[in-house]
Image 1: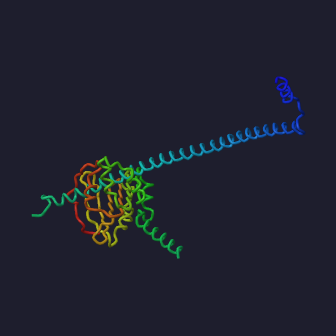
Image 2: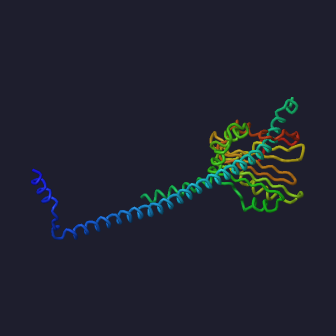
Image 3: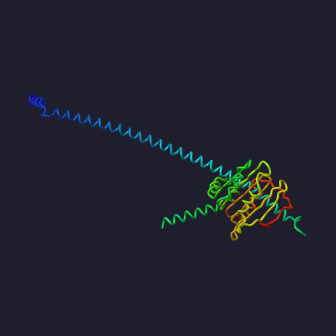
Length: 116
Length: 184
């Protein structure tokens, strides 16, 4: 029994030569995997690089637009306040002159002025 | 067809803008402004009135009143000139402006003189049908001239609101010079 087991073990563990081209196939597969790994790394770097550039440009544009908007709003507010001041000045001047006219009308209509 | 309609619309818009513009016959206002020691020229057309009206504070009583007055107006043009001495402007300068309010649509309604400083104030209304469409005030003093041209519908209650408001004190009037709508 032991002899039979021993013979089978020897047969199973007997050194055999690899099939033809085995080494070349293994080396080729290893090289292929290495290239794929390099390609993945390259793509990852490129993706990050381009995205970073686009992100920077987009942020810069957003900042410019936001700043322009704020400046425009500030200027518009200033112009509006100036227009309002001009309007109030015009009304004050008009009011002063009309008050003189109103006084004249009141004087005409006052009992002292009406003929008996 | 579309082009013709566009041209007609532009022409109409130009005419409407011209109606709402201030007058400066012969450039007399520019000359007076250049000659004056102090000059105030306020020119607010309809778009500027609307723009300015958007910044009026409704919580401020005077500004709220102003907003009510300018609603619907097409323009407010005020020119106030102060001179160093009497004679720096001529009656012909004033006549050039008065000539603008001599048409059949215009009526002189008030002409008064102030007792305190000899200021003469004349008020003209422009009437179309039953509506007042314009107001002109011409005030002359020896060293000061004021022209006010308000274009657009004026309501009598607005005038009552205007007179004596906006921080202007009451003034004494020379009783002998007050007359009402006699001559143009």
